[in-house]
Image 1 (cartoon, helix red, strand yellow):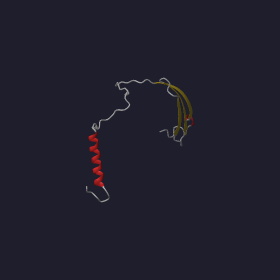
Image 2 (cartoon, one colour):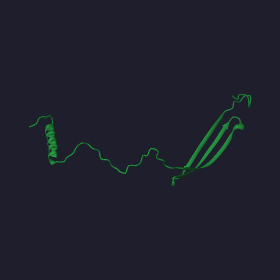
Image 3 (cartoon, one colour):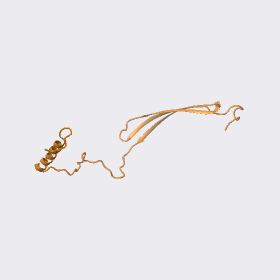
Image 4 (cartoon, rainbow, N blue to C red):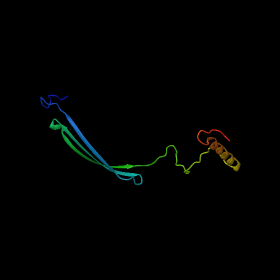
Length: 116
């Protein structure tokens, strides 16, 4: 609390405004470049504590991929799932078609639930 220190009737109040922007380049062979700009302005009720600051910074980042767990991308793009359904003989397929026909017949018209 600086009440009365700078001026008998003034209390020191500070307000800071900051804005920044950063511009990145594309990564080229694991190296990325960036330039950043930061603007700061402090408003104070005591003139000795006011300031204006401009900063420009250049950055170089190096990227290198390490696979600590030994995980690699799969060579196979599609892995077939086993559903346990095989149609090896035409007789099995006809049995399925018969079941579908029976189901359609049972559904029949509206309100009918009987097999002829």
